[in-house]
Amino acid sequence: MMRALVEATESRLKGRLFWIANNAFDKAYIEARLGVKMPFIRLIRPMGVAAKSQYPWDLPKPNLSKFAAQKHYSEIYSGLSRNYSIPITVFPFGHKYGGPQHLLRFKAFIDVPYQYSTMKFYENIAHGVPMLIPTPRFLDELFNTGIHTMLDTNILNDLHRQLQKPADAVPGFPEWSAYMDYYDPLFAPFVYYVDSFKEFQEMAGKPWKELDSRNVRQGGPEFYAAYRRLIVQEWLQLFRDMWPAAVFHSV
Image 1 (cartoon, helix red, strand yellow):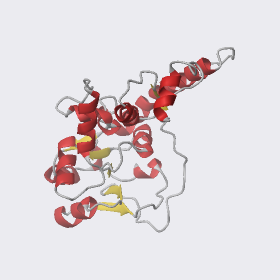
Image 2 (cartoon, rainbow, N blue to C red):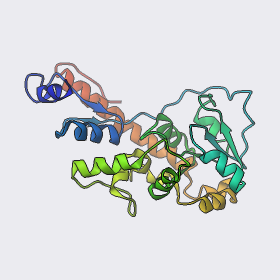
Image 3 (cartoon, rainbow, N blue to C red):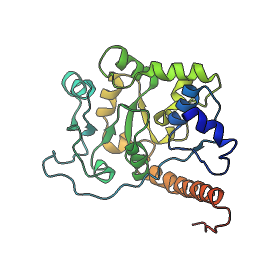
Image 4 (cartoon, rainbow, N blue to C red):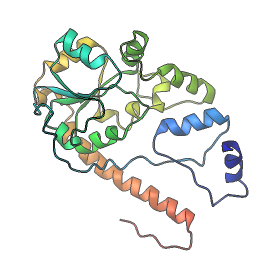
């Protein structure tokens, strides 16, 4: 079915069927899965917009001396607190926390990837939330030691081998990491990569202003405001291609 749709995109459905991916992994995955090149897939990332909500009364009060994280089926967050004495408020799995505006009231947000991309990653950058994310090497280590097994990086490595094309990775990072927006060079300036538990401890020992040495709290929103304008233009171009006779005005 999917292969037939891909073939039809370049023939009888040309100009009528459009493909969109909102992250780098999805585009690469479908190409590798089907074994065909799909240059017509447009990569249009999320707008990074989050509704403003109340901070839940049943969660610990935000504190600039503590990290925040959201629990998943992983031992990483309890391990950071128990084994390394890192002050961290862990929101229960599935519990709302009011959005990125409230994460700004913590020192930073620790995000150990459990999917190849998540909406909150873009929202956090757009709202200036400093994020601590394991490097690809450390993420590998967490998976291989059974501490965090929610994301198998071997899948990304296999994906990269199947596609057999160079990937634009952060210098020093493996090429497979380019298929995760967490490690995309575009977003890397607004992320703090952590390569070990010791580095987590070192970051925990810094006051919140010192930790944010790149001034993500200001630079993230500035970057995403400009990037959002590009995203809107990409959507406008899509609509123009879908309805050539229609008139769409830029914003």
